[in-house]
Image (cartoon, rainbow, N blue to C red):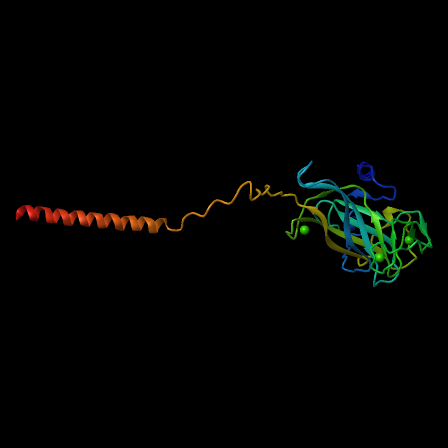
Length: 261
Ligand SMILES: [Ca+2]
Ligand SMILES: [Ca+2]
Ligand SMILES: [Ca+2]
């Protein structure tokens, strides 16, 4: 089943895409993981393409592809980076449905750095990733960034902060030293309970509760205000009738008395 999920996740995606989806969240690898460090962070999940909105297809989920923006600014060199994105709206640390990815080969000791996001911090866009500990899992140099595409993912339309935009839990993991060998994706998880960090990020996907189209002013002008004096008019009418009645009574009063005279 994981193989099928992985195949589904990878189908139709660009060549640099990797990762497995399923019960591969942080604590599935390191049960005591705390993940309050932030040496390596997923700073953003940039929406690349929205294939199925929250409204379309399977209710309550969307299909999209993202670019993972990772930063190690402020941290020393970190090794064997693991990336986790929760797919069910729950926690990427504790949950049971995650994309688990790493910096896969080909790796190089001399990566090409650019500055894709123009912030003055060198970054690697799509690989080849850095290797600085001579194993098969990519590393990240101190004070750098990287951009990595996800496979096409189905994510739950969950909005925990109520701003109308889908958000998701993400985690990163790393090793602090170059000693531990990492041979594959299966080895890219927190080296200890402390070597991971998590956050919740907006995915840029509207929750999809579409408002009914508002009418244009010319097509449907706002109705004229209801007269503010219906009661006053009634009162006036009442006063008029009362006046007429009293006049009638007076005349009646005058009438008989004149007849009596
Ligand atoms: Ca940059
Ligand atoms: Ca490595
Ligand atoms: Ca949100």
